[in-house]
Amino acid sequence: MRKALVPWLLFAGLVAAGVASAAGPEAKAPEPIVKPVMTKALPDYPGKEVLVLEVEYPPGGADPVHRHDAHGVVYVVEGSIVMGVKGGKEVTLKPGEAFHEGPGDIHTVGRNASSTEPAKFVVFLLKDVGKPALLPPGT
Image (cartoon, rainbow, N blue to C red; front, side, top):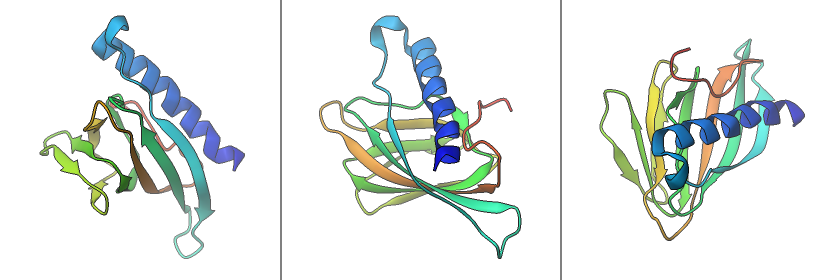
């Protein structure tokens, strides 16, 4: 479980830096709360693992622009979120709805659709073993 925390410490740092620089110090969006649920190697797919995370956006919460060198599936559990990748349309997702992003996608929009209610979702990442789950957009 400790290995799963390392990428999300990076994630928290990117969130803090990206949101602060994009919005200015007085308008900083609340950071997401990320809880690792499981990391599991996939023996049938050598060199691959699945990382499962629970993410909560506080009211008005948002992610910085980022990417995953992975296939990612977001499944909304509570509230409503807005997701989008570069070149794609923004979509608003409600509980029971899902969103996919691929290894080459730049995640340009990830935010709570509400400024008064929290939103919670689960992220499933299929990634290379040992690679960070979250990367800055230019890498």
